[in-house]
Length: 185
Image (tube, rainbow, N blue to C red; front, side, top):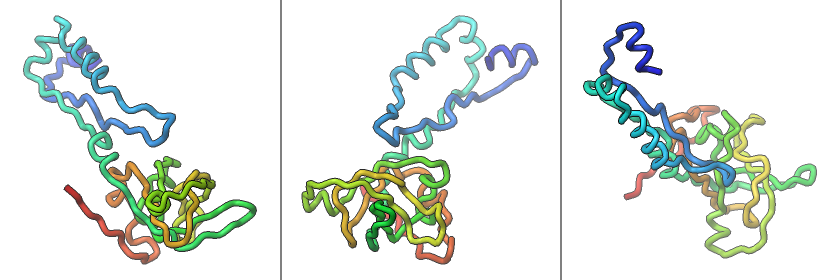
């Protein structure tokens, strides 16, 4: 398409961005992007005779986005207390949308694990609503998350939080403490 537009309007471009961000799977129903398939498709296009001359002096750029950073981050939050309301198990954590806005902002569910229960090898599972400490109904990580049995003081890991965590969140919202951000090598 870009080839046709440039030819039609006599445009002289120097760069083509082939990826404005590649996604990552947040749930078991989503598949990881197939880089070999993308590579194969791009090679087919680039090797066509009509494009070779056109692309000779053009820089091709990729912006991998979440594909690079998304799965490299884990948000850890502590369960402040548990409660039951209308038959539903609810966990209130010390961090919320002020630290990790994405789940509430676009209803994107991240995989969540109970780190403490894994270490203690708890076998029983329950479904929980996981909410933050803020006084707003949207402060929720997941409305129905299956976790190993969870207790006050447990630590939850919210996976795939390396992109759009700290940088996207409302850190000063309602004057709650800022999260720590640690980098491990």
